[in-house]
Amino acid sequence: MRNFYNQLLENNKEWVAKSLESDPDFFNKLADGQQPPLLWIGCADSRVPANEIIGAQPGEVFVHRNIANMVVHTDMNMLSVLDYAVNVLKVKHVIVCGHYGCGGVKAAMGNQNIGLIDNWIRHIKDVFRFHNDELVAIQDETKQFDRFVELNVKEQVMNLAKTSIVQNAWKNEQPLHIHGWVYNIKDGIIKDMGVNFENNSMLAEVYQLDI
Image (cartoon, rainbow, N blue to C red; front, side, top):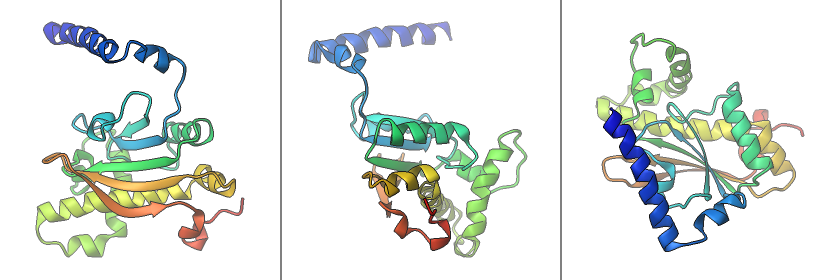
C-alpha cells in the first residue's frame, strides 16, 4: 500500500513536468481562475473519469459525482454545485452522464440490504417504479439493466430541469442546455440519450415555476 501511495506522488511530479513541457505557462493560466463551459454530473465510479473520456483539459469541466449520477432535490451538495456552476461560473451546458454496468443501478434492481446506502438507492428504485411496465417487460436481465441505466439518466435530466436554479437561469434568458449521456465502459463510447432541455416550456406544465 505504501508503494502505491508513493507512486501517486511520483505520478504527480511526472504530470507537472509533462504539462510544463507542452506549455510553460500551463499552471499560471489555471491559477488565474476557471471559466468552464460545462457542468458534469456523473457517477462516482472510478472507471468514468469526466475529463478523460471527453478529451477535456483542466479548467474545462466543473464536476459533481455521486453514486448513480443522481439529481436529488434535497441533496444540498449537488444543489450547491449546480448553483455555483449556473449562477457564478455561467456554464452553458450541464450533462448528466450515467454508465452501463453501474453498481448503484444494479443494487436498485434487487432487495439486498447493504447499509446506509440503501437510503440513497431508494431514489434509484423510484425510477424503476416510474417505468415499471417497460422494465418488467424486458425478459433479458442484461438488457433490462442497460435500459434501467438509460431511463435513470433521463429522469435525472428531468430532475435538473425542474430545479428553481435552472428555471431561474432560463427566466433570465441565460443560455443553458441540459443533456443526458450514457457511457459504455466496454468500448469507451458515449451514447447521447436525446433528452435535451433549453427552456422550461419543454417541461410538463405542473413543473413550470412561476418565477
